Structures are given as structure tokens and as C-alpha cells.
Image: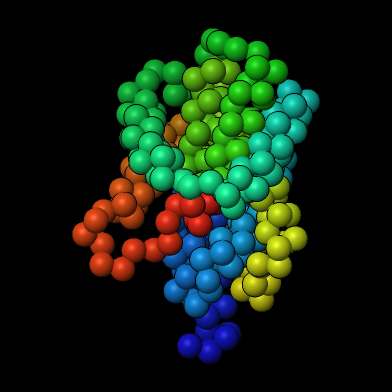
Length: 267
């Protein structure tokens, strides 16, 4: 395939992934395999994925800000904790194995899918807050940020469930703030990948354009339709990520992809 054809294909994939990410996360299920298919090494694929996904999460965050769905003042500490956690995770993944997370994450995501599907707290109305913003920042911000730097799949869902279940945010506000923190964790991990010279910028920039457009459109749909749209997409992506991870662990796979320890951040 010629370079221009490859760039166009990756642009379209990133466009779709950016829209999915803005609504529910999980766009890395499309973009990381596409980059591996394009011939990149696993580390290059993950680094390039972070480079392009930053633009999608940035576009979604900006759109949510314009729509008044993000309170930067209350989120500031969570942003700082998420950045620190993601940077630590991106460093840790180079020396630690991710086998435990690979087995645990599908179970958590299936549980979250059931929560999103059945809980009356998941709606367009705010509910009772269970913890303060500071506690949320140091617990959820730091831990999920670390997880995104270390492993990654379902990060947006983890942030969203935290905002809904712990801070009582409605699903529209939870999705918006989750995307702000996801952008933060993406940026932190990207900086470390750039320092290692692993990003293939020619492909990253082509995909970044698709991500930016897709992220903006996805955020607009969230603001326009709220829980009616986001709830089923979150459930679907939670189950999709779980199925993907379980398939990756299947002993019947003849040609397994790199282990989770080398695949830290598919979002």
C-alpha cells in the first residue's frame, strides 16, 4: 500500500476512534491494531497511538469546555494527580509485568457495564456526592492515571464511573471531566514516549487530524444527547474492551500479540 493510501486509511480509522473515545473511551481497540498492521513495532505503535489520541482527547475536551460541561477549578487537582500517576505508570511499565492487570481489567469492565446499564445514578441528573474533590483527585486521579500510563484499556470508563459513583456527576458531566483527565494521562505518557524517540510522526499526524475531527463530533453528540446516547455506548465499549482483552489472553490464539507489559496504553 502506498504512503498516501495508508495515511488515508489511518485517518478514517482515527476519525471513528476519536468519536468513540469522546463518548466512551476504547478507541485504541481500533487504532493500535491499525498501527501494528501498518508495520510499526509494538512500542512504536503504542507511542504513535498516544501521539494521535492526544489530539482527539484535546478536541473533545475543548468542545466540552465550550459547552460549559467542565469545571476547571474543581478538576485542577485531579488533573495534576492524573498527570503524575500517568507518568509514573509509563515508567513502571518498562520494568514490571502487566499480567495481573490483564486478568483483572475485563472483570472490572463487565461489572462497570452492568452498573451503567442498571444503576439509577447513571442519568442526566446529578446525584449525592460521596467523597470530596481532593480525595477523588488523590485516589481516582492518581490510580487511574497510573493505570493509563501502565496498561490503558478502558481508562475513560474508569474515570467516568468514578465521577458518577463517587462525585455524583450526571453522565454528561462525568464524560466531559473523564475526557479532560484522559487527555492529561495521554499527554503525560506521550512526553515519555517522545523522549524515547518512539513516535512515528508521519503516521501520527495523519491520524491526529482524524482524531481531532472525531473527538469534536463525539463531544458534540454527548452534549446534545446526554445519557440517552452515552449509556449504551459506554456499556458496548466496556464489553468490547473486555472481550478484546479476554481474547488476547486466550491460549488458543496461534499468533498472540505482544504481552500487556509491552502494551500499556490503548485507552
